[in-house]
Length: 445
Image 1 (cartoon, helix red, strand yellow):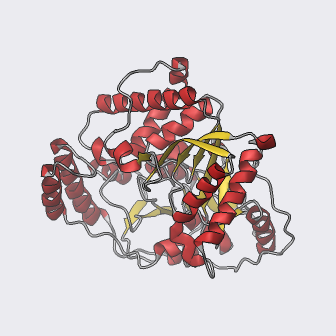
Image 2 (image 1 turned 90 degrees about the vertical axis):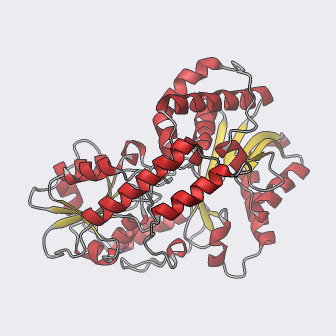
Image 3 (image 1 turned 45 degrees about the vertical axis):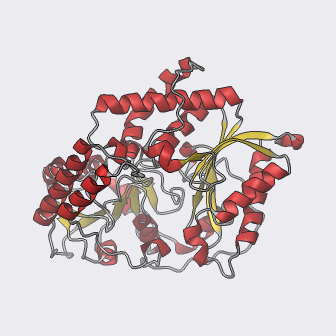
């Protein structure tokens, strides 16, 4: 779009009222032409439910466009599998079938980008479904410009990157010219809008089975599932309930040396998109076990929103094989665990942010947004315990560095669920902010 040139783009998401208005304004001004738009709104060319859950809109003919690129994205298959496991269509399907689906999506996006001469892909969040991750990987392989936004829980601010590899570092992101001092209250406890009134999920496997069977009989089902998938889900739900109740400990001694590891919701972007190899959370706990003294405990607590997915019998079997590791009841207070722990270990979750705000170190295995801040130690081969334990926390330094990070966020609300954090929020003003952001980022080299 530099020098007034119109950008030809693919949009994934951006279907909130203000997001739609921003995209439409850019189209009207001749700054953007949309080749394809994946979302839930009527303005979108591809409805996400149909595209992701039903594989509709997929050209039945193999295109062969830039087929040499296919081999460069084959390593995306395990991550695709992890993300796509949240899609009902995947339930009960053998790995070979899922690989065929993967290749169909790869060829589809190659044809879409190459055939339309697309020069930018814009995603309203890091990939979470699987097909959106393939879109991202294909675009990067073709050296197409990518813009990924990520809503923060700071009012009217969102992060953005041009590559997932830059997330948490934000080296490729420019800073606003803002000299205001950012105040950061010291303390572990936070009040997140997305955790309001969250209670541990209750699982009713039999009623869920009946509902799924009725849904299966509905020829107009929105999110189809196979019969084998229905029973696979039922079995997984039963295993989750049985092993969770059997394994979780309701009372724990907080006076012994321990590290706190809160499990992340799965499948979700905190692991699938931002966890890298540690999307497999148990591999992180296994590395942690080797890092800390044998006399230290590892206290693991399940995410309150976690359901049966990725929590089968062998998840609990593998967890039980890690010495000195205890799975705690979800009713045990998180902040007491953070406060009493030697340190917290996470993949990329908000518990790490809470930890450094309270003046303790956090070991991270993935790419959280706060990765570059003081008090964060990123796991790597050869990392030593003393690096975590001997770090001297300086809250004023944390405030300063957070201020620098804050100035790399863009103003606006990408996720309408966070509009409530903005005083006197209006879609019209938010649309103006989003349009201004897109105009600027599209004009960057």
